[in-house]
Image (cartoon, rainbow, N blue to C red):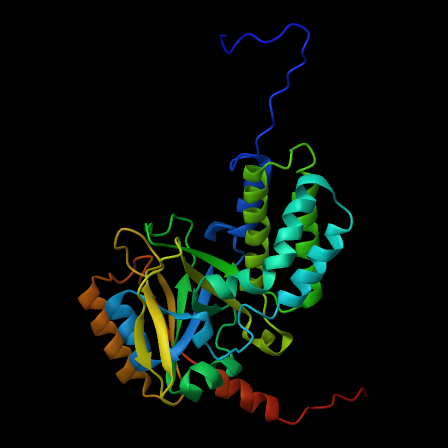
Amino acid sequence: MPKSRGRFGRNRRPKRKFDIRTAVSKFFESIGFSPEKDLRYPVLYHYTSTCGSLKILESQKFWATAHDCTNDKGELVSANAAVFDVAQAWRQNVSGLAARALDIFLRDYDREAIAKIRTAYLACFSIARDDENQWRRYGGSGKGVCLGVRVINEPGPESEEVFSRLLEVVYSEEAMRTWFFEALGKTCLALAKYPSTIHNIRCTLASINGLAAFASITTKTPEWSNEREVRHVTMERFESGVTPSVRTSADGKEIRYLPVSLRADGKLIALDEIIIGEDQDFDEVRKQFEAVLASKGYVEGSMEYPRFTVSGVSDSRERNKLPCTVLQSS
């Protein structure tokens, strides 16, 4: 019997199949990994040692550290409890496909959370320019350098093994809960018209896991809020993963990392500014950087070429120590 014919009188309705390119998936893609052009900040700042910053410019790569090798023990896990609570709350208010997927999500979350199944490699930047806390923690207390890197509206590097995105960090659990509650709710409500087939459950679960992963990757506890971080996140596309490089920290800890490029097609890192720490010889350090920039093909006056400035943190500190002058009316 030809497929176009069926038994007379039967009202045959094709099953609705949830496709990866439906509105739900597009919604997830739009909120999960925003392109760099959507960031509000034209320049981001990276504090490091003078030696480290020279190596960055020589290699044209930043070192992205594995999330479990950073100085934050709560990296990628601090949001887990809130994510679980929100998913439980929505499970009580939905049925059908969304309910089936949430049941599996809640059952498996302890072992399927992003920190358990993938490694996120993080290159950390800040929106804070010439910040005393950043100098103290990452810039050698004024003996290092701060690289001001331009955020450019252009496609990033493509790779078959990994993908990278630039994401702003949230330090408020309440803000993260609100975002995740709304995002998960929109996802669940959009599923009402789809049947609970194995294929649809699998795709729905992938979307929910993606939302949860985004919450985990972009959330840190309030104690880190003065860093005002925007992070360049690199992750493996497949479970087989990539082979990271390994270095040993000053305290003997093994640190896994990936050298990552910010721009495609061998384009130079676009620098807005190089701020030289206050406890260095400004002219001498500037000469070192000028030599490296010239060797890499930077052209003075181009978009990629930086201005050189000296940190004003000490001046700001001294100004704060000055006694206040009280103006009296005559």
